[in-house]
Image (spheres, each protein chain N blue to C red):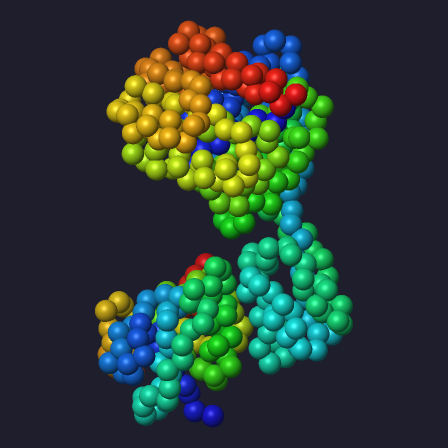
Length: 120
Length: 287
């Protein structure tokens, strides 16, 4: 199975969408093919308005969609634990990038890997 | 009589009024309990200097998973309204810090794979401060859920045989504030004549109304600013302002030094007398 990348974005506009910096609260996730970077689909995040535990629910959404890598701005502690447990790699991008720009930085190896170790 | 000292805004003098009221009422041989329910920052001890006799752990019930035998059916996740249990494939994870102890998951799990576990969230201390029986709840740093420990310390305090039980409430109008005042016979709202003080008083008053509470208002630092809007609002809401504590250097110096101004600043004593008198009037009206 090939890698599948999810990027937290603020709108359902494909690769030109601007990134949303909060993993759990992002309204949409753009899924792209890990090799070609071509868009597969946009997922809407039903948990974005959840009172609590949004991040953990999105972690499940990622796993259900076979996501291997997720690019966002910040991951909450519970989301971080869940994603790690579900073997989804977390990458943090600086704010202000479009999905396409974030992918470019990702492929250049410019994004930093987030893990529980980093969180603690 | 159970008296909650509350107010939505932080730093208006809730603890100053609550501790002074406990001391004032304790002077006339009443049995007085002071309960510090501001569990995220309990500081009544700074004024009352209690001798702590016992410390009990406060805990909440959370599920613990028997992962080895779990079938991974996911029923627990679908029943959990708080996203505290995740099930992906056969993998089930419990995030106990998100759990609200509703215990629905224990009922939902037909296989009995979830067992009750006590999660320690803080401590309840008990002791004496002179003739005042002292209770304090202190939440562990980083704990997200405040209300359960507030309820636990309040319930411990209100079980005491006493003439007056003073509950020093957490600020705000969230679950923690509700837990701090739901058992009270009267709520003393402390505020100050500033735009923030007025804004948050409106929230606190709305909460008290929802809880059907008798309310009194104490204006602290009463001569600090322009109280015209505050007084107009109180008149329109028909709430009694029973005391006006002056913005006084000596009070500030004493509180900064961990001393109660009661018995040292006559103007302060006079205002506490007004608060106590208003409470006595309410007490007679209730009886």
